[in-house]
Length: 386
Ligand code: GLA
Image 1 (cartoon, rainbow, N blue to C red):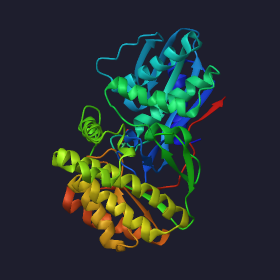
Image 2 (image 1 turned 90 degrees about the horizontal axis):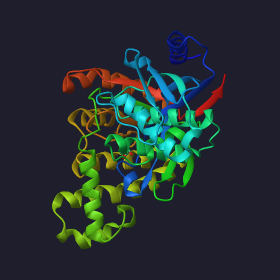
Image 3 (image 1 turned 90 degrees about the vertical axis):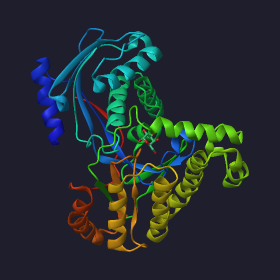
């Protein structure tokens, strides 16, 4: 049993005075490439990581969800399963669960019944590694499994995405889709228009390294929705539904009808889609040189065109690049942006070099330490009857 499982199970027993009968787990994610492309119907290339959210649960014979959050000082909430569920006035963690319950209740009516649940996770919060998606998917998959609803994994993901919208974050489908559908040792290329999923094996000779700038990213109510609006504006000017359907040639044609910012936002998305397709081919071949080129281009595009990087993540990218050289440094900021983590794909013998360089150089730029960990590509959500 992992640490989070042990703590969570004990907390369940202490709070509800009974043994749990169900266990659920869903991971966080890291995105190798394809940023802010998902809500434009484009491509992304994430994998599930070794950190996630777990839940122990038991049917409680009521129509209430009663839930204990170990990571929030054992904060507790309960709410009725109803066709309309009000948002909690102040507790964000509760609202993710309320949003998911609301969607399930709408879809399945009174097949969804009361559960007692304890939750614990180990995805670093605010790091852009999708702690909230792992919470939503964990809970959605638990509800589906507990009541035999047979909800498809992609539908669990879509419900998680709807829960984000309920809270005010108009995110795309990437985070929930990978948390639900991750496969061990594989990245997942997601076509966010057709929802086609393609597994891309992680070559033996490459390691995924995540470097947390420890600059918190907080997306709810932030500039994320503004970026999305700019993309929608550019698509409208070009007469397409989604930026996925536009080409660079089209963008150039319409350039004079757009303000510079809208043009640059669209340029990021259109070129990023191309990079995802090239990067996934490079990844399959273990072609680190090409991957390094594409990931660096992605970072520069996020920095100059989409304007979602910060000086600390820029510095981390530079440190890795200067340490390994352009051809070996596949590195970029990952996730929604405005801080969080950079992801690097490196050869095993270079892991220590990167760690040493970051530990020696990052604090001078940021005043704080970075946190570094390796991950393999992990499996998505899974349920167990105990
Ligand atoms: C956040 C959102 C995702 C995606 C990324 C940026 O993680 O939840 O849907 O848009 O940002 O790629």
